[in-house]
Length: 112
Image (tube, rainbow, N blue to C red; front, side, top):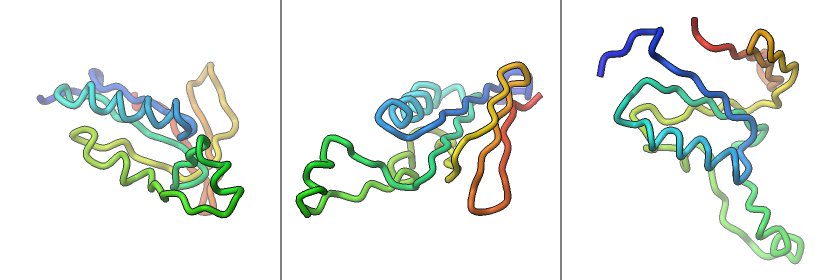
């Protein structure tokens, strides 16, 4: 489907916990046929922390390492993009966020 810039939607998901990761995967999967949605997931780490298993980690047991980009791979025509950063400086009025990364700062705002 050929879409114009006016028809495209951009979604920014902050945090890749259970809710954020699920939201990114579901959005990408449910809109895969439309092709007019771009999902960006901002999280400080590239691995998913399975909080239900932290007690195992505390006792020295090994748990599976789940790489977030690999979990998102293939969820849509364009898999959600991941940005390893901490989101800061929200501005609801301008619909912009700033992210602090180990590389130069990255900022996000919807395409116009």
